[in-house]
Length: 423
Image 1 (cartoon, helix red, strand yellow):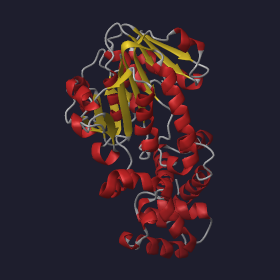
Image 2 (cartoon, helix red, strand yellow):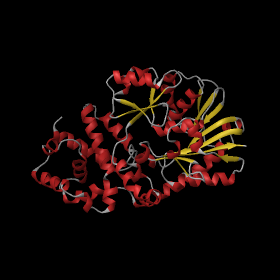
Image 3 (cartoon, helix red, strand yellow):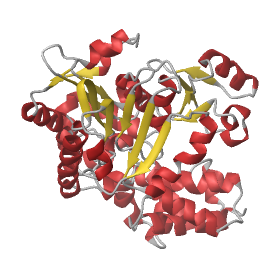
Image 4 (cartoon, one colour):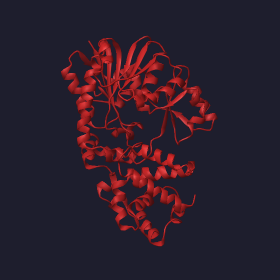
């Protein structure tokens, strides 16, 4: 495709995404459905442009007023990937000079906000938690996340699948923490691989895999994935149960659960029972009260631990939306806890990096429910033979009560988990 046409399309897509009416990935997917003329390379360029703009929006907002043309075009120029010669063939002389001036800007001369590209309401809690490590996090958030796979432990071995993928020309290495994980740099077309078609692998961030591992579901147990969504953790839990017992996948969105069906078919699991519920107090929940061995609550959250994948979230979330989420998280956790039988385990998790969605929720729950005894995530992970388990955890007298994962420290998405056993 001619560079000018590709840049024009990039500007159009940038304009749609910056309305923030819908998640960026949904806007990009719809744009591609409506424009079938773009091949794989053009689609990759368009997507990379959009995500560069979202990652560096404050910097590009600062640089763009000195340019010419529409703001969407200026933002697209700044975010356009690849060699400058290709891009410049689509620019006029004024735009070329402007772009050269932008490229010559020394990052050290920029204001902090133009270096971190985060809203100020998010900067404050991150600096409070990380101190000087804040800038390491910033650097990691400017990079795309690697592609993590989970090997289906029901009928596959990680080493065998790793060899198979390498033979297919896909560079892959074992994840450092999850015993089920493989990590790929790049974005190969997994749908064409036999390993994917037969259910040997599923796409799942290593941090998400560790949540399923922490639940430690056993053969023959009754287990609930309370906010199952598309079922990534459900499938990991079902495999760890060796396809025995009964695993309920609950979610308030039937649409999200529909996405589980083809994945479930590939997995060869028969112990999973998806069910859409109206709300956390649904009658199905009441009927199972006090009967469940293990419950995972991967609660609806801000998603701010996934900014490498979803950089639009930092612009679409706000202190007000987070406050609303914490009320929802508290209600869901309380309802899910009713399912747990004495001796059972409850795991609360988010993919957020904000303490008010994580430690604050867990500590309030512990104070209100003395029959739920907090467990040490570090000890549980060590018992499961996870290497470096203490370095994955924070909090409590031991410093290892909660699982707390960071992109810059652990190369995972940002995750939190708290664990209790009911007495």
